[in-house]
Amino acid sequence: MPQQLIEGVATKPLKVIPDERGWLMEILRRDDDIFAGFGQVYMTAAYPGVVKGWHFHRKQTDHFCVVKGMMKVVLYDGREGSPTQGLVNEFFIGERNPLVVRIPVGVLHGMKCVSDEPALLVNTVTEPYNYAEPDEFRVHPHDNDVPYDWSRKDG
Image 1 (cartoon, rainbow, N blue to C red):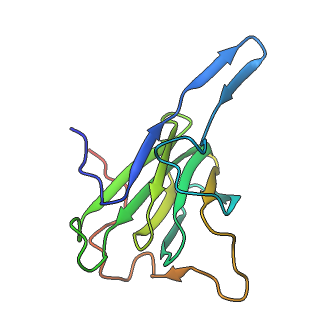
Image 2 (tube, rainbow, N blue to C red; image 1 turned 60 degrees about the vertical axis):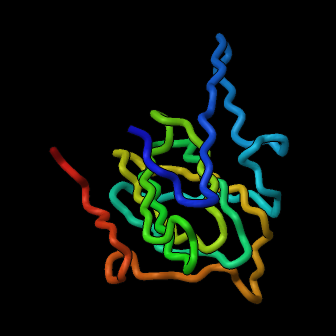
């Protein structure tokens, strides 16, 4: 059963187009419904089992796409007055599930590498990074009030 998405979150399944030379995968286009604007593109890596998060932005919308390995991307809506306040979304994205996830302003988010090798995440953001006044507000990954446990769920 599909999960209820946090207000402002959107996803785009990606299509891999293979041929005898290799393959191509479009990630984000400005005419996509999911596209919220362009500020810059960056790539970040996470080693196996490492949690990177939590953080949120006051101005910036993120568009996450994992292009190597697999990551668990988790969102938490702690926004006052949001119709989905308190909701958690969990996405497993990467080589086995190519997807873009749009993360709106104010939504707490983080990621954990769940593959055996480092995972690479490409983020297309709506604002360029401001070195003098970074739009990044952090919350400890484990010691916080977020109703989420980063542990692997065996079963």
